[in-house]
Image (tube, rainbow, N blue to C red; front, side, top):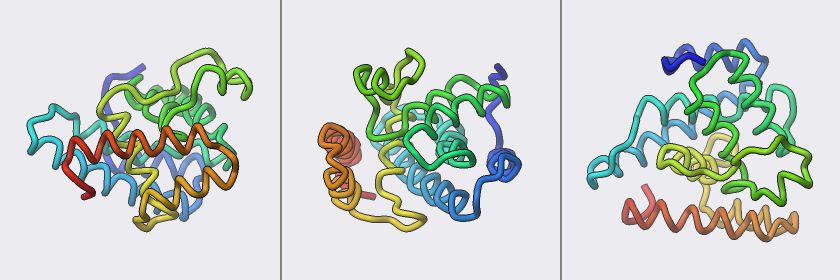
Length: 176
């Protein structure tokens, strides 16, 4: 793996090379914008946060949607990122951004490789948080995502998304 993070243009080029639709690319750009806005607020509040990692991870978080629009896009995206020799930090953001995190029990049901699929680092949490507030390429209240998950009977995921939202808004002191 390389330790060099891709630039914004390199990340967008990777999305295009792997066949992501314009809709997915626009979503990723919107997530990156909100994630960087959130990272700026966190920095102003004294938190250490890697802006380049947040941007690269946010831009590439949905690269797996070039192959599937199911929850499996997280694992497929991580595989694409690994084959592109992206840093482990970017791979982790991609694999951990869905559903506010996926538990070990859920990953076993999904047949995913044994790994950690819950956001741990501040950068991972910020990207996952921003992703849950962007519907297509527009900002939306967290309730939109929570209600969608609840409507799909994904109660635990809805609760994890709400907890992640509360954690980040608690750190930044509101919604950016």
